[in-house]
Image (cartoon, rainbow, N blue to C red; front, side, top):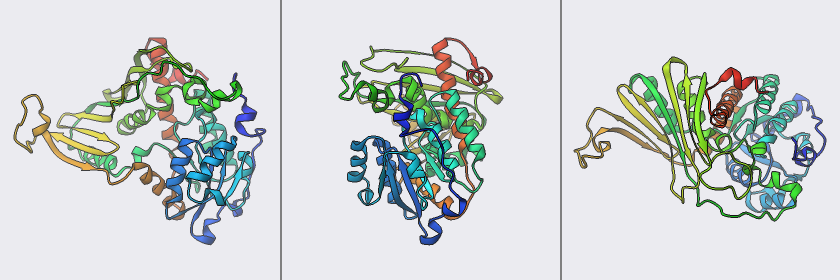
Length: 393
């Protein structure tokens, strides 16, 4: 990192701790998985709270380099005021009764913290994406290859655990929508564009405190935000793309940070003639349209965090509006029963308790690299291949 103090961000030196396997199974004694949280900002508090509420989990430690973030966790996460709090993540990983760790730090730190958690012999739930650049993703992949098969590795791509997304996948795999050649992801959301921004923090802290606004620390919006939809494109295409083209840019002047786009449209080309389209726009004055659609020869699936819809040529209702054929093409709809992050967390802890081997490191890495491929394509204004991307670091 050129402008970010790695020592400050990592809470000490970059040495890793190796914990003996026999010390890493505290849940065997009390039937609950003891977990720690590295990074108690907004996402760490949100996911950490859901984890604390899981019947198979027990919060055992928290960590952040900033005291105000630790205080935030103690106030907002149930029981966090009663567990050990660390400023150095290596001390948390050395805690002998800790079975698992939630990594919810800025994106550029995910590979280093992931690597340390592997060396410490922990089960890992890491927030998405896998890294902010190609080098970081490759580092994460090397670390994952060293993890014991018994260690559960999961990333915060929640859609893969949603009952509604899984039902849609079942419909697809049963051939009910026919031959699919086009998958689309819409990531349309945001408030009004900021006209000015003044940080209250010292200059040396700003790239960590406001990490999402910088390409170096977040990868930019296509990597940090749109990766969810990109992950669904890869998941349903059963592959990573071979190459990509795209366009994008800034509709509004930046008030802070160094994003290169607040809107972009990427076309990914997958094996078998399948195209994946990412359509993304920020600063939408509160309007939100976040979903995926898969178009087949016999029907269409629409997926979102709160529902799935299966459309086809079977009329299910009288035509109500000549301009809205959805009135008569809907075959089936299912609505989510709860926030899908809970489904992802439940899967993580259930795998640990039931000793089921599970790792999504490869999928998470490929989805992150696919986002980076799209960014490279629109920034360079040309077709970019997967192999060229991998050679970038």
